[in-house]
Length: 159
Image (cartoon, rainbow, N blue to C red; front, side, top):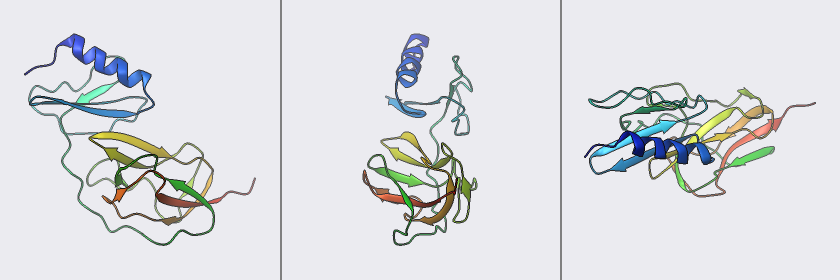
């Protein structure tokens, strides 16, 4: 089964109107992954997959599952806690083998990407809502999270 240009445009329009930075749609034996706003998660192309599809979005083949890395997990520490926006899988890096977005001790600015929460092949970037320093990472890479699960603790920067 192939997707028509119109169907791809409709998928891109839905992504553009949503709050998501990336989406993955499976229709029959075709899987389409699209991202916006520079949130491209580089994926290996597959035969028949288009490397780019208008409107600043990109499309690629289904990514392989990320191997678990050695994460820093621990109890919630003092500071500003960033929680999971939804149920899903917690990914520390943009793709398998890539370095994590942040580590304990990393300085972050408001809006910096901290991780990805994947639910049903839809990728949602979790961003810092305060500037500061990462003091704890509470979930193992590839771990299951629920909405509200603490993911990171940030020691807010002094203004």
